[in-house]
Image 1: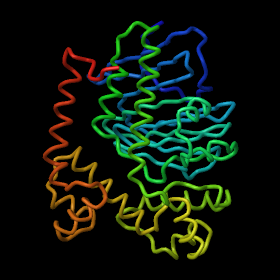
Image 2: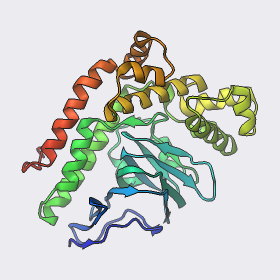
Image 3: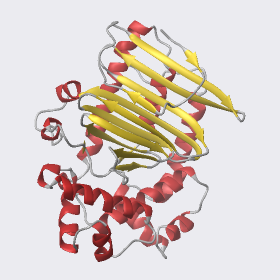
Length: 348
């Protein structure tokens, strides 16, 4: 059953991904035109226990939604535009922050999480939620995320470094959102697309060194919270970072503990994390803003374009010139295609 209502994001939502009991897909699509721009909130609920949420709204102020759930489940968050932050309970510091074109797989324990969207011209998000059993069933034997799925009282991320939302992933997401299949057939389509996105995530993660995977069981909960707090402070002061002793003092630990536990949690040093994040921001600027490579290099802290290009290629496997010329053209073509009459890009 499809419904169309005024677009809105609730302040509170009680939720758990489970079968809708109807052997089909139920949908609620809310839409609204505000200030001459179309806003959409689209929910899909499959009898396979897959729940999807897509929103494309314009926020003039930060928006927070508290989600409460009775049991642990898997949450895959894709940020297409904007910034979103995840808070546990009453914690002021977010345990994870996503920027444009980033995603990750999260295990969320029973309880509450507050999701906060930061204001911007456009905020666009897509998420997939499934039970632990569904996700675990489709992981290959020996996958490093399997042991983390058994914990009940602590969240976990499949990758310490958020993965990039590629043009291929964007195409799949828009295919799902624009699919007009019969609901009974759409159930199979939604399941197939969920598994396709899981497979892409696993392939991407193969390129990440094994030591960058999270092993929160090796770090006490209190220390893990301090490391997440340190991570968020770094994110907020990316281009004017604290010294390591000052950062350790701010989160209530010492320099040695910060260095040791930060690398355990995130698979890289504090300096390495700053470098990775600066490169990710540089990539986002190259994709989304009309800036010259030299300007982006200076914004990232490089005085020589050649040094910037070398660091960029080391992280992403291609030069900033390629992403500026090639990828941006690809995204432009994709956008035109999505608004054409041919809505289906993938073959099941």
